[in-house]
Image 1: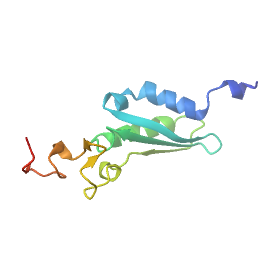
Image 2 (image 1 turned 180 degrees about the vertical axis):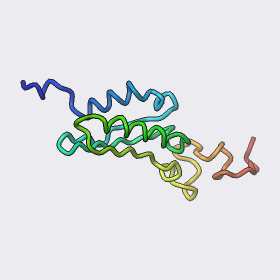
Image 3 (image 1 turned 180 degrees about the horizontal axis):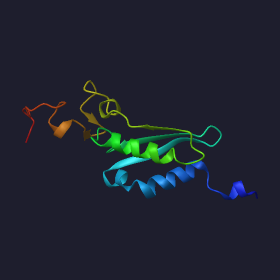
Image 4 (image 1 turned 135 degrees about the vertical axis):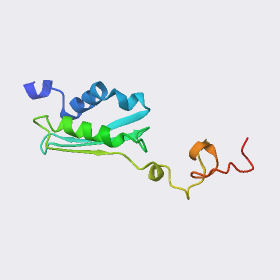
Length: 121
């Protein structure tokens, strides 16, 4: 077994770093996944989800991740993607429930309505 075989892969090191250095992601109900970590090109792609989608400070989090990983000698390019919450939920044209989970704002029946409607308790 060579020295390279005993070392953690770039993907594993990024995943470990994310869980150790960015606990705020999980603390706020977010998720992170390393989608690409190519040691040949130095490209790393991370996707944030869960509570990160639509979070007002997700741009700060993505900037911190990018800045820190670009300091690594084997990382040349970092992309951090955060899905738009309306796209990941299907937008306002989608049925109001996904597998029985009301995903509309405040459960009020439509996107951002201040009128609770007849079915509101």
